Image: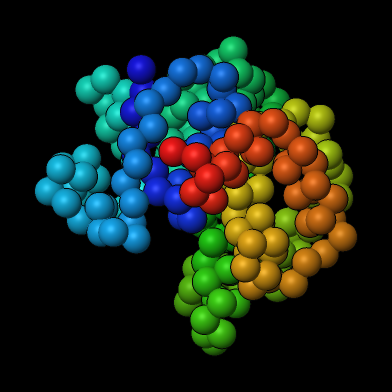
Length: 201
């Protein structure tokens, strides 16, 4: 059984939503960052970076939400969270799965900190272009791959929900609202939110 280390009100939501979408049993290990649990020797043996989420699957251990998404989606193909090898949507899936941490998260951080960056030097572009590109892709909907929901939607939906709805750091757009409405209507999203908000452990 997979073991997921998580904390309420953190990026763990992505991994919680992912695991709930698979429908498989997994163990949740509360690692409350508000109490410093992520800095204990026990947890640092799991993830030396002292960050959640982290995942253990037998002898395999990993962190970083997008890596966890990629691994779990491959591990449980019956959940249909990733196009299989050879599928025409595979490249697009991988692009958007890693667009979330590679472009969306830095764009959110730039807006939140009001930091002025040189788009070329930053390497990921600028916030305006990131959200323009994302908006255009979501307009083709209903999901980032079109008709198929995938782990890429979990990565993107988690980031958007955090920035647009939870903390209102990023100005909303109609395409974002429609997309987040679809995400939040999913039962797995709702179950994960109960954990992420601290209502359940």
